[in-house]
Image (cartoon, rainbow, N blue to C red; front, side, top):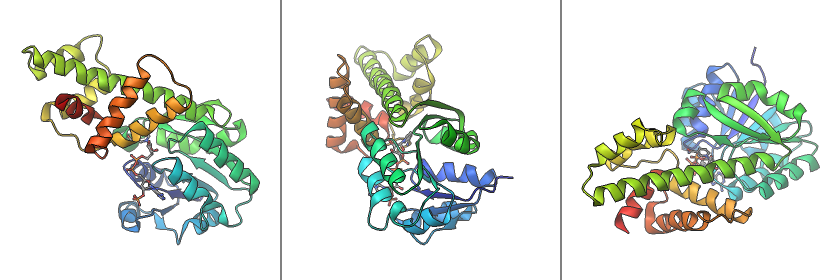
Length: 286
Ligand code: NAP
């Protein structure tokens, strides 16, 4: 019986489908989202609405957080009425948002100072794997906490890996998102180059996807390129953030600086709320 009382903060593109899977698996989930109206979908699926972040921390045994970035995660945890503002001794907090290893260590320290436990567990995979419960979960923290959280990870993902102490999971997440960025930019540049030389977009995407260079991401993103429409599954601003965090974490490889600049400029050009594949739109206009 899945009777661990769960709290969940952050119901964006990722948070909502993840909560719905936990509800489907039988966990009771109390939710909080800064814009309270966005809780509706989770409530309709069976979640309860927490009075506030402080109550979310006090009233639940395991509390998960899925928000945009380092600033949001810090506010949620350590803000004046945040998750850690009440008596949370013995609780387990799990940050599944993508943040820097430094912020993750800060959140760990903040929890430990309150007698609570902490895991970082950023996820690889976008909205579809979040809906299907097939995310890959990159965990940093202690074995004991990992084992406690494993039943939840088994619902949310097809694989969870304890990669090391707090900080290691975030580092692994930044590494895989660097590879994601390379794939997206490579796909966009390749299609645009082919187009400029008279090759139809559809034909070029078939050549890529039927051959050895086709992969999960080229296949998922091809329909959006064909339609030339990029509603956000993974907002471009979040990948620009991840590439910045990777640079700050010491990524100094030959492709990393131009890749970061490309996504940053696309964000500055107003494409931040579009999907990551909108890098194609930006490069097309360049
Ligand atoms: P999203 O749809 O943009 O949702 C962001 C969430 O963060 C919303 O619930 C938002 O609340 C909340 N938030 C932002 N700033 C806040 C603040 N200062 N205080 C409280 N709440 C705040 O983002 P997402 O796509 O779900 O991504 C969430 C995290 O997962 C990010 O770290 C992202 O990098 C990572 N991630 C995303 C994907 C993906 O494909 N989407 C995949 C893997 C990992 P409001 O509703 O009030 O704005």
